Length: 276
Image 1 (cartoon, rainbow, N blue to C red):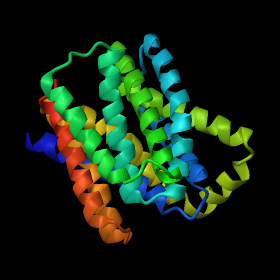
Image 2: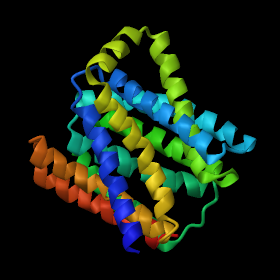
Image 3: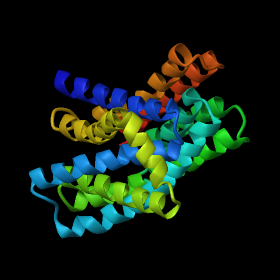
Image 4: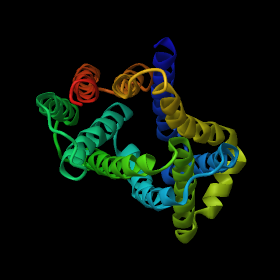
């Protein structure tokens, strides 16, 4: 259990960490994300080769997930342009989990239990407290990020069930690198990417490795503890983001955002432990 706890908490820290790297980047944020996921794709390519590849039936889901990751990256970049880290990150992560839970019930016919409803209402309450108002570009783009998280979560749920989970994680990393690169080239951002890589390649190589390692750690953790236990600890990153925004970035509305993030985390923990 201790191993699973440490792995899941490490995944939470890494996920919040690479998002913070994007938020603090002095470069155009989509280009920063492109650089990061390009490195992640290279690491994933090596990982897929070492792990022995993936069955062909998983590639359809990986391609679809890679396509959905493109609007995810575009919206995430825009959200961090407009909003505070302590608001955008918890809304995006908590909202994505909330919508994925609803989507699982509606589209994947996941069972509906009383605790699921309580958890969904709790998460929604926390998100409302976080948003303050559902107007403005920061909140609206964060909700857009949540929608894309919901979409790729549902796709990855189907995809990872159809093939080896680790191989699938590597495949989605590769496809995200492909789709973001195609968009970056099509929109003539290659010169900006070269500038980023000349001056800051170590930062984004580390962030790219962290983004890939986050999912891998979760996959390892579930070998030592239940999926619900690991997922609940993994989502502690929403509170971590609120703390980082308050103590490290000096963002405002600290008490409200910390409290609201705590409510979201409680809802997420209920969802993954009691609502299954």
